[in-house]
Image (cartoon, rainbow, N blue to C red; front, side, top):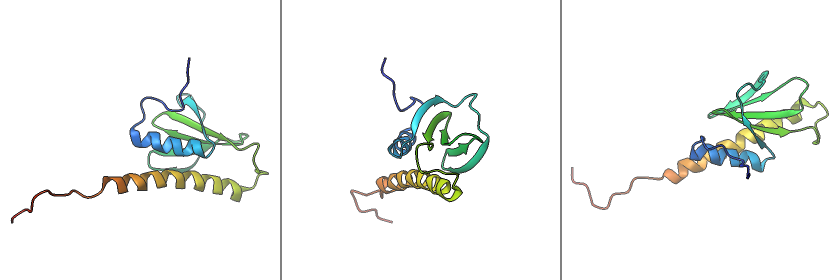
Length: 116
């Protein structure tokens, strides 16, 4: 059976945001129900970022979909500034998707001149 990086219940914009997180090294881990969320780190849009004590990872949850990025193999060394930069990078990726969505919406054009 083929697995997907995207749950079927996310909206199109949330799927784009999830793809941006995957491009940063996040992986889809399934449904967030019964998932331990100890410490909220940040949020942007419908996404909330968490971490748990003793866990070297950054978790992102949106409408019950859990994405996680393992930071253990990266240059972590307990540096809070480095960790905060990883959170900022994830937030920025989501904000960029939201900005592009606004640009795509564009302006309503009229085919005919409207008379007052």
